[in-house]
Image (cartoon, rainbow, N blue to C red; front, side, top):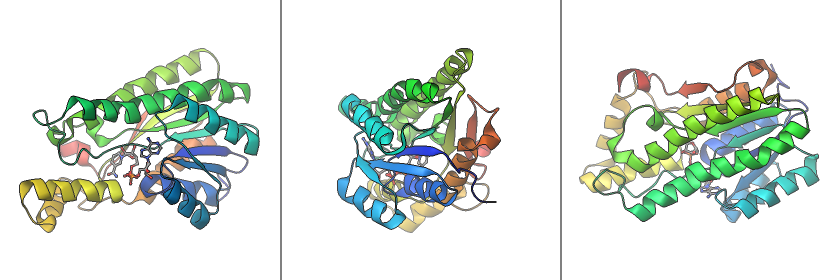
Length: 261
Ligand code: NAD
């Protein structure tokens, strides 16, 4: 099947690499018009060239940046129907345990992962409502569902995204906005963020990288790491009209990790 997003206009944050880039690529192949945003100008430009979609430099934790991003989407597409709040921070250089996480790091995690998503939703809702509705997809994590002691602040920031998403979904439905809002919960997906997490874990434990990778793998019943394309496929479904009756739900894409951890 192709053309599942024909006529849709999407903004994808953190689209320069990893899961975000895979979502941009999949959406483009299915006919969407896309604005890719990222905080890293060089990476955004490179991704834009490779994926052949326009880009805009944006820090998702800045209200001003959100307003100019949505202005840019309006200038290019006269509004938009899909917002993917994908940009996120996962890395505290291995110092995210209940005994090591520092308050400044904790706040940085919430500023980007939670407030960034909140501002995006708040600013997008009136624009989407005005143009007849749409789909908001927020990237949460398996760490919002499964206690992960070495990801204390990260897990909390992603659990907040999950609960916020349900409140937004209910608010939009009850106000007749026709805006659906859902979370995706990736498990362990091979991206620059995931590689860095395993490298930091190995460094802190003084263990070989391969031993850490095998330990991480042993927690996934399906026995392999996910691919960014697995998350892009889930996002495609939620963005499309096939998901027209789905709101406030959690789509877990983790090879069964939540079943055993
Ligand atoms: P990544 O680090 O590989 O890519 C994240 C992108 O977001 C980068 O291009 C980065 O420049 C951008 N970014 C970071 N801070 C930003 C900011 N303030 N404003 C705008 N852009 C910013 O990460 P990924 O692995 O592709 O993860 C994407 C999303 O999925 C994140 O929200 C992450 O928490 C979530 N997630 C990932 C995994 C995984 O295993 N990779 C698991 C669970 C959840």
